Amino acid sequence: MKKSLIIGGCFLGICLISSCVPQKKYHAVNVRNAEMMRSLRDTESDLDSTRQSVEMLQKSIANLKDSLAREQQEKAELASRLESAMSASSSVRQELSDKEQRLMEQQERLDMLQQLLDEQRAIMENLKTTMDKALVQYQSDELQVYEQDGKLYVSMQDKLLFPSGSATVNKDGREALGKLAEVLNNSPDIQVMVEGHTDNVPIKGRFEDNWALSTARASAIVRILTDTYDVIPERVIAAGRSYYYPKASNDTEEGRSMNRRTEIILTPRLNELFELLQ
Image (cartoon, rainbow, N blue to C red; front, top):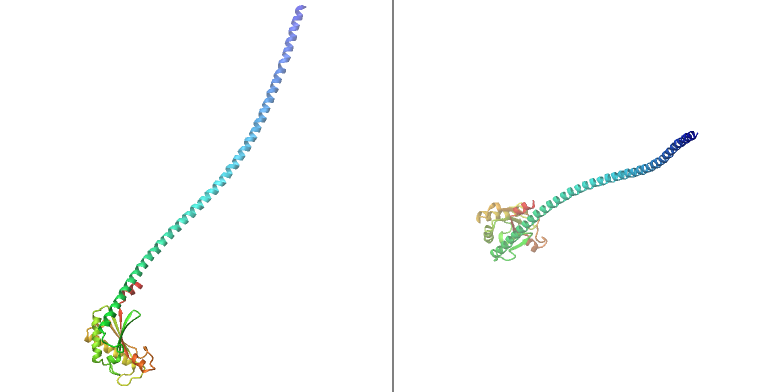
């Protein structure tokens, strides 16, 4: 009996033990599940935060790409503008250099022109001085030497050169032309124009009109200068101007007397000046 009680007690204890073990495991499993659920929720929360961070980073990256693209575009535009500016600057520098070169060349031409003008002026001043000395014996109502417009004029009245209405040079006129020719032969670069002038009184006799008389007188003087006194013919021009270029009024005898003249116009050679002006 006692033995039976012991066995029964053992059996009862075993049953009790067997019923207690599954309940503890179940509790442990529940705890474990609860922890895993909390961990899962935490992980999901972390994942959401990570996704949000990624989205923000992606937006930032997109903004940076847009900003970088704009900056690259601006850089390209600046580079293009810089290249254009450098090209324009190079063109401007070249243009300035060309202008400076042209200005230098023009200044050189001006300097050469001024030098030639000074030389010509000195030649004409020296020629006038020489001519004044050569013709000093003649009175002002017979002969005048003066400068005008860069030329030297030797104005000889007809009473010194010709009888009235004639184109034949008299003795006194030939002597005066000889003195003048001596100066001309010592000045080979001087061009000579001989202009005959008359008053407005109609001519009578062997000449058709005052044109013919003025031209014949100029030609007569040219022949004496070239044939008698050896002035080179290529240097000399003969012209008649009749009464159309008066020195004074033809309304008075005094004025008509002044108009009856022959002007020998002396001009320096201007070939070099003309070449520089072209």
